Structures are given as structure tokens and as C-alpha cells.
Image 1 (tube, helix red, strand yellow):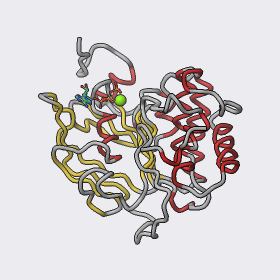
Image 2: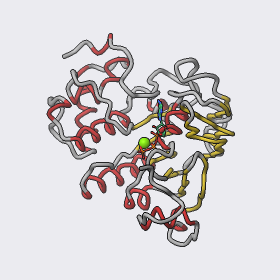
Image 3: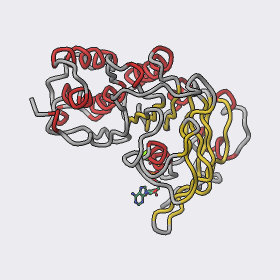
Length: 286
Ligand SMILES: Nc1ncnc2c1ncn2[C@@H]1O[C@H](COP(=O)(O)OP(=O)(O)OP(=O)(O)O)[C@@H](O)[C@H]1O
Ligand SMILES: [Mg+2]
């Protein structure tokens, strides 16, 4: 096995801190995350333009919108991996200064990346258990048991000894999902309070998608991580995992409402998106 205790940061993993954390006042409810006036530009491409977004504790919110509209960018800003050009980010009322590496947030934020971002040279078991090997005092056999249980949950039993190159794209996706939800039983209070899922069901067959969608809801119910933002293009995932939907396009929130309203609204962006029509206010970049 690779020497995981001396490894550096996980590729693409934000913060699922495993060190003891003091209980925070106000941890029981209210606003968990607030973005105020967030803007982000890459060269001349204004990707986010003065976006305000609030997520309450216990809320499940889907961010949807056409490809290239800034959904992954906003998740990376929320995770503290990318700095906005302008605007403020409050996590549980505390203003974030700089990136996550500069100062930790008062609660953990976990992220499932659009690209699986696994270590190619590590086995599935080592990838999923990476943070436990790196930061916990747990014996290896216990970490293996935890990893096996999580692999069962994502529908990949018995794959721990394989390497990422030996998996399909959808399997790699589920391994990265498993890595984001693995937690240290020594410090259950350190489970991330906010999970960010970037297209967790993209590339999965309908049954594997249902397994992941059910798991996202089960984690919300059972694991104390009741709040999440999910980016998805998949109709079933929007309907089965979101309570509220935010439609992002041209750098702005064009529409938001309860998931039940996506079929009722006459907002032209939402109508075009769900019908898949080429004609409409959303123009594909040629
Ligand atoms: N690091 C970067 N440098 C330059 N441009 C970037 C960078 N990251 C993202 N972009 C650009 O910002 C825009 C938004 O990208 P982003 O990945 O957030 O889109 P998205 O909404 O997640 O799209 P998709 O649905 O295809 O995943 C795109 O035009 C992309 O090319
Ligand atoms: Mg994206």
C-alpha cells in the first residue's frame, strides 16, 4: 500500500476536515451559506455577474442551466477552491477570507467533482479511505471496513483492490462520490455540514442514477449533513434530489423556485431547458 500518511492533498477534494471542531453557535438552523454579489470573470468571459444565493440548513438546492454557464465555477467558489473577483461569502454567518487553504470555514464543506479526480496510482480503497489514512488514528483494518461499507452503498462492492484505470467512467464517478461521503467515526461531528455535488449522476445508467439519487437523500436524512447544492442536467436527478431549483444563465440567476414549479412556470429559460428546444432565449455557442 502507498504511504498515504505522508501524502499531500487529495486531488480535487476540498475540505472534509477530520480534526476536532468546536460546536458552533447557531449550528441548529437558519442560514448556512450566503453569497452576496459574487462575480467572476475569466479573461473577457464574465461567468458570474453579481450573484446572490442563500442556502438554509436542511435545504437541498439544484443549480441548473446550460453548459458553460458557470455552475461548476460557483461550486468551486463556494468550496473555497477559487476566489471570486467580487462579492462576499458567509458560511454560518462567518465571512470567509481568502481560500479554504488560508482559513478553514466554521463547518466542513465536501465536494463531489464533475471529473472524478482520483489518484491513478492508488487503489479504489486507498482513494476512498485517503483522508482517514492521512488524518485519523484508525487502524488499517477498520478503515478498510468503513471503505467496504461505503463502496457497498454506492453499488460497487468488492472493487476496493482495483485501480481507477480498471473502472468505467461511471464507476470512477461513484468512487469519487464514496470518497466525499466517507467519514471518521472517531469524530462524527466533523462530517461536512454542506455537500456540493457537481453532476453526480452524469454518465450513469438510469438504475445507477437512482442508487446515487437515493443515497443523496439518505445522507441528508441520516448522516447529519442535511444541506446540499447539486448541479445536474439530469431530469430525474433534479426532480428526485432537489427541493428548490436555481436556474443560472448569462452569469445571473434567471429563475428560482420550488422543484414542483419547474413544470408550471412560464419562464422562457426554464421552458426551453426542460423541453430541450433549440429555439428560445438560450442560444447555443457554435
Ligand atoms: N480556470 C478557468 N480558466 C478560464 N476559463 C474558465 C475556467 N474555468 C471555467 N472557465 C470558463 O467559464 C465558463 C463556465 O465554466 P463552468 O465549468 O463553470 O461551466 P458549467 O456551467 O459547469 O458547464 P457544464 O454544464 O458544461 O459543466 C466556461 O466558459 C469555461 O470555459
Ligand atoms: Mg460543470
